[in-house]
Length: 536
Image 1: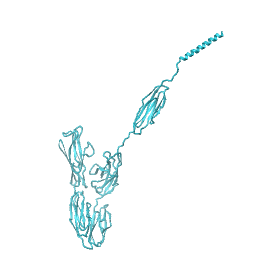
Image 2 (image 1 turned 60 degrees about the vertical axis):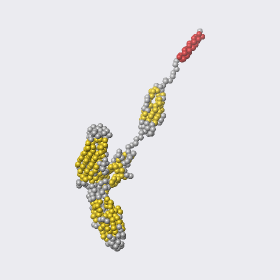
Image 3 (image 1 turned 135 degrees about the vertical axis):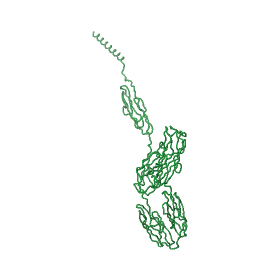
Image 4 (image 1 turned 180 degrees about the vertical axis):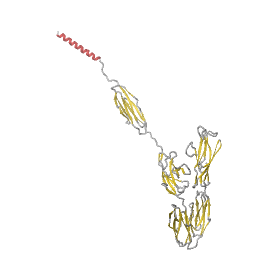
């Protein structure tokens, strides 16, 4: 009975074990999930300044990924690794090189090429600084006439090219646009270190003058220099107590007085070895010069000294034979434009003589001294005073007189402007417009007097041919004259047919003196009008 029960239990246990074994073989095994990754396209092109970007990663939970860069300039700043969804951020550094560069970002197995452009280089535009005034400055006094203005050159940067200077001088610090009060010049070539301009007209005396300058290359124009000043001194004249001295054989001393305006400087210089200036070699205003004359043991002789620009003739008797001198002529007349000439001297072979100019506009060019026969050469400068003048040369103690006629005391000149095209002077004016609006051309006087006189009238005549011959005139106190015409005439063309433009200006000053300038003559350039079809 017991054995039968045990057998049943064993049989049940074996059955359960077999059933358990069968169940184990029918159940499936556990495996890892399958991972796929999706990466959003990031920005891949950057300028030289650099920047930043990001890319989103989409993946199943538990799926791991990484992000790397092949170059240091493209740096992963966040999201270098992750699991499941995530975001990778990166920065691109600025590119200072002159070539483009690339880097590869590998994000969750996907590669992206980052391209960055090279640094751009720009050439800065050229510049010109203001020049600085060098001389005359600080209200310094200068001799009346035509002073030279000097500036330290403007500094430049970049490819500046050819530099020229514009100078202005006026008796007002506002430099008004008035040719009577403000004198200007353009196109003065730049010098080495400094640039200078000598005024082309005489300035009035006892006046405080203002001046300034700027530099330009035609495109870039620098600022004006600081305004500087100078003062023209008084008009000086000198009167000597005598212009000749007769000395005895034994020699001796003599005094010559100088009368002049306060502030006017003068000097006294001997021109002969036997004459010595013992006092008064320099002076200002009125004063006195004392000379010493050596004893003469030979033939009679002549000499001279120059006091305040005037010649003083010295004649001294000798211990031997007296000398006589004969000039080929005693006077000459020359034109206002200047001249050269000569005069002969006849004397005994042992007799010495000198030739000295007594006038600033007369220069002895040869024969300043001689013995026996000889020739004295001289030049006479152009006369810009507006009146005839007389000067002298003392030759062998005798006076040779030169009379010079006056030149015209005015200079006439003008410039043409086309306001619709440009603000600077030109040699052509264009009748051109979209519609039938008239074009205006302007001629402006740049005339000036050579003395203190003033221009009181400007007489203009303008002529050209456009369909028919045309003439415009104006006579007034205005230095400017305008004339107008329209496009589209019979003789107009698309490229602007060029026709000669004749302009004549006659200026008259307050004394009645006149001067005339005509286009295409003298220093005036030839002018044209350009005739255009309308609508161009």
